[in-house]
Each structure stands twice: as C-alpha cells, then as structure tokens.
Image (cartoon, rainbow, N blue to C red):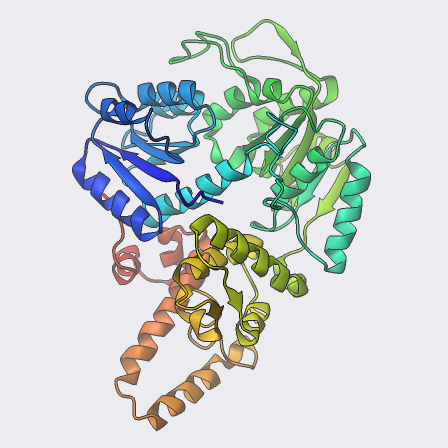
Length: 476
C-alpha cells in the first residue's frame, strides 16, 4: 500500500483547485505539496520524488502534458493523474499516450478524486517487482501484498484451478462481481506460469474512451490521427512473451471485438494507421462482472469471441458467500495498513468481527480493504470495537445492529428509540432522520459506484439535495 513517507503533489495554476484538492487529500491521510506551475514541480523533483502527482493540463509555461512527458522520462513508474476542464480527444489521447494513470475531468467530484489516490498508490506499491523478477510487474511481494487469501471451499477450489491452469497456454475468462479480486487471479496465473519473467500488462477496457481503446490495444503509427506525433506501442506489443489482462471485456465496442478475435486466432495485427504486420505471443486473460452470454443474446458481444476467451472459466465468489474468510482478510488488511501508515497494529474485537461477518459486503473484498484502511487510520484505540464501525460506513449504520432480517429495520429502530429514551436522551427525531439518510445515501452510493447523480436518482431525490446533505464536497 501507500508508503508512509510518500508524497502526493498537486500541480495546478488555479489556487482554489489546489487548495480544495490538497486539503481533501490531507484529510485522507496523505502528505501533500502544492505547485502553481510545471516549472516549480520539476525544480523540486530531484530532491523529493512523490508517490503520485495530480496535474492540470492548461497552465502557463509548460502544460500538464509536457510535465507528464518529463516525469515519465525520469520516473516511468510514477502514477500521474491528469486533470482538465477540456475533455476532448486531443487532451485525453495526449494524456494516455504520455502514460497518464487516469484522466480526471473538471469539474470533478472531490470524493472521487481522493478515491483515485487510494487506488493509484496501492497500484504503485503492488506493481513493484518481486525480488528476482525485476521488470515483470508482478504484484506479489514478500509481504504477501496482492496475494489471494481465503480458506473457504470455493477459494480452495479456485487455488487448485489456478495451479493447474498456470502452466497451460489457454485463454482464461475470470468472472465475478466488482471488487472480488479478478486481477489478482490473472496475476497469480501469470506469476505461476512459464511466462513469469515476461511482462504482465493490464488494461481496463471500460476505463479507456472508446475512440482511444483501439490505439491502446494495438498501438498506432505517427500521423495515424490528429495528435499522433510519434509511434505508440500498444498493450499487445508490450505484453509480447507474457500475459495481457483485459478487465471488463464486456464493455469492449463491437468493432474492436472483431480485431481482438483476429489477434486471438492468428496472433497478428496492424497498428492503427500502419502497414507492418505485427506478430505477438501473448496469453490473454479476460475478466468481466457482466453475463457475457446475455450480451451475446442481445447482440452486444460476439459469440465467436466469447468462445475464444472462455476456453476455461474461473469464477470468484462474492465475499458474502465466503464469510469465513473475513477474519483472515481483515487481519491482513489491518496489518498492511498499519505498516504503511506507520501506526501500531490494530485488532478487531469479537463483537466487531461478528458484525463484519454479518455484513453483506456489496463492494466485496475491495470494500473490506477500504474499511480496514479507514479503521487503521481513524479508530481511536488499538482494539477495534463494534461501535467503531458505525461512523465509518460499516454495518453499524441505522439498524444494522439488528439481529433480525433486513425488513425488520423498523423493529430495530423502535428498540433503539426505547433505549435512548430510557437514557433520557432528547432530539431523537433529528438523530434518527440523520442516521437514516446517511444509511440510505451510503447504500445508494455503493450501488452506483460513487456516482452521486445516479445515487440521487435511485433514491428519488435531487442531486443537489444529496450533495448538500453530504457536505457539498465538489470542486469548481
């Protein structure tokens, strides 16, 4: 996870954006330095290399894309998040061609911007090569970061399948809900295969704009389109001899599915705008949370491509179906977070652990990991009690302490009210309303993946209402 000595830099000539984003990042536990120009950031670079950089595109002097090129030339593994109010093809293409980790459109949701740091920093740590495998990009290290964990029967069966399949040069389709760890399966297959000393290259096809995805996969020649000033090597060429992991393959546009099918069948392709036939030796592992057969029936996914990808299928169970793994996972995440944050290790009480095991985990292992990081940073004592979970977005919210079924929340509410009244508490209506709204908002945000507009629509309230009640955390 994030190095406790790591820095996050924010480079933007807009003082308001710098202040708001830097403040939010500091509140999330990061150390932050602010720069008003690319020149200022580059001048500071030799003395203190950050773990992550946010940079605007349009700034006086060198723009953000020029800064990106210089940063990548000096530190290729440094994740850079490019921000811009101008989400056009030239800006996004330039950012991704330059090696940007993500493109963040302004105005952006501040919670989403901070969440990107939580994703980018663990990614950087996890991508450090294991000892003796420099350059492979393998995510497992001596501390076990990025390693699949589980004792449930379904996980044991999965581990056995990975052991058998790792040596076989077969395409694998990994299925499972969001947050279950599909990329970890792909990395394990690569790490244990004869290709382990070759590159592991991952691409989330849903995260790349459709007009850029072809170039990302197959590369392009100089002059292939506006802004293509030099040759770009695509992910297939980068993965030559190794493994290419295509996440969320169900979101791939149909025209690209045809090109992917050819590569899988023939092992060859042309770069965008190119005439040279490129031949590659790549093992493709695909993943999706969508029912691909249904997409085939709806005409949104090619049946022949599904057959090519789905030679062997590995399914990751959701965390709610392997609750016995929650203690082991939580202990690992708490230990990792404590080491990264420089804090004393924390442990869960029996009551807290029981509450975690009773939770349904709609965000799966990723949700549990995020919770453990929050607990490691914010829980007041080394022993985490059940009461510490409620304000941190866990099952303690509004009625989650109920022992009955979810539909019995009103009974739990009544029991809570009686207990509070017996204690002589007042203003219960406001307290209950606040907790109920918080529980509804968090459930809707989990369902929508953090998209506030969609969450508001699910709840039947206006986005402005939702934003105001959550604190209006939005930057200009």
